[in-house]
Length: 354
Length: 77
Image (cartoon, rainbow over all chains, first blue to last red; front, side, top):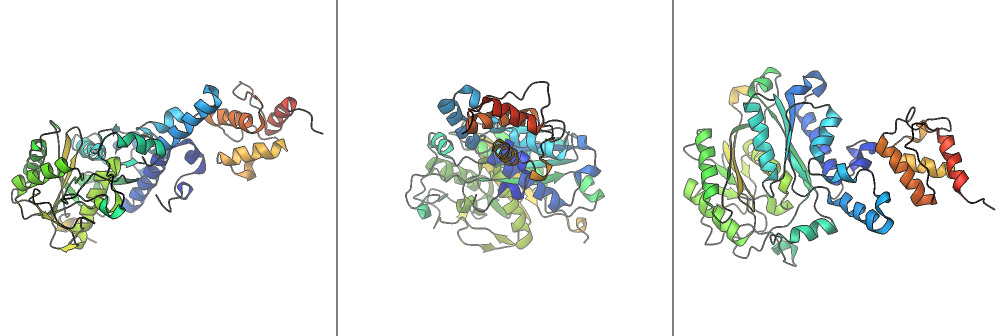
């Protein structure tokens, strides 16, 4: 990530011991806490959890560790290799750094890793396990080894021209481009947020997770329909932030599923076309885009895509769209069929007095 | 200078140079954890080719570590 200096966000001793994807998570977690104006020292550490997605682990430190092992021998491998690469490292480092002790989990589920993190974060609040959950995920796969591993998924765009590389729902779509970063949302029970006079950006009305045959887009339909039902949004939503994997069959299946559940006129967008697919950080970023759309009344475009493929019967947003936005559906759908649909809404009017 | 190299290693691990002095014990004063102690040994090996074990029960001072390194280095002209 250009311009990101880990030591601007993380104490140097901790930077040394951890991989870039943990640096991103530590930075984003701190920003989430600052934005929420919440000092964790003032609340019960067992009432705070972390629910975090990551797909790839820490490839940067793996590259270093492999070199140390093969070049200098097994006794010369850095002492952080085992703890720093592991996909649960962001959860671990963030919880140690902030003294968080509550119900926490990490999720590795391909493109839906971050969505699972948010789904379980919301669920743990509903179950009463936590009042506050740092929820989202982190991803840093752009190293020589990381990209080599992800090429084998067959999902990466092979276009030479960056402008033609990630075109969700476009007739000439040819795969996705990897992004890097972390997105952390501070989820909070409504009672807890109201009790401390928190500034509420949005309310999660529903999160539904389903798993199905990866070839069958029916799983997306079932997840979306269940989320709309739980959200009480029988009339639909004002916009959809799609998975938009950029694969030929994936986008077609998702478009057909959206059209069947919500019709062909609801605005659909995939803002990740502009910054790449963030896997563990993907849904957190999509929800942040949804919250901005709720605040500004502008649906962000699917950058790069000129028009939706005829086989994708949706109203794709390719230029910023001004429209009243009260509710947004966010989709996440993995290569192997893990699927999450989430409905987020503008906070109730009388809940942000100031 | 061995002490310059050891200082560089500790600063690289994130310890403020102002905390580092000849009498500072690595664990008791600087508060190195076990992984950082291992990494100091590995860096001394990488940079100077010496095998200095720091993981023992004895909490060595900065000066004592320099002395252990000096014992292993060939005499300088």
